[in-house]
Figure 1: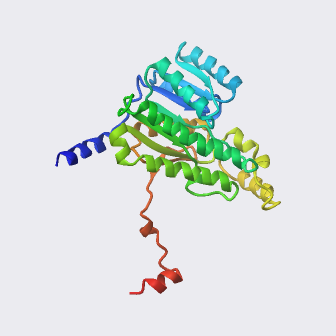
Figure 2: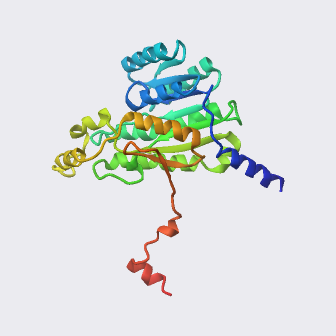
Length: 293
């Protein structure tokens, strides 16, 4: 009975509003685009300080300077790191702990879309997110050295509704949803006090899409660039600011293991993942063959 009571108490806490005021955060890919908007919104809403992690030194230093001038010197530190390189990435966490003394929020935002560089997509979108998530547990776990917190992994709507224009990209983003839901299991939360949440942005006005003709895989179909460009021209692109606002809302309100969508400049909404048996296609001939009534 005692164990049951503890479990209920911890489950309730995992669903309470997370107060970001006075907290510290680490954001990957924070030197430009959506990442920069996320850092800015965090600071604008009470976060004490942010470690901006980016592989692009020029963008990182420029953003650090701009944000410190706007929000106050010392509110942002930039650390150069390739998130697919464990040593570099962990160094960013160590610098964060040394500087802020504690870390409360990790936002794995960095990602790439390039079907001609499948290895790069795997290294950044999958390996980078795994490492950022595991390092978040290592340095924030209340069961080890920290005080718990939130890890938010940015996936994509392609991770729940795969796009034929980016098959490997879609697979990497689907992986992020699976990783987040797996590590969001109650048993991990009970020990670590860390919520793991996945946010899936829809089509967004970013530099990734402006290079669309150069990042699709034409080897499988020579017309794919033309098809993709045509489809994209008729697609509404939300602003990066809409995504950063969604990050802020879900960071505060999102429960452990939840998956959210942010698209069309609308407020984010949580999706439910149905039980696989509820998704069973009952009109299929194999179903009719083996499940006769």
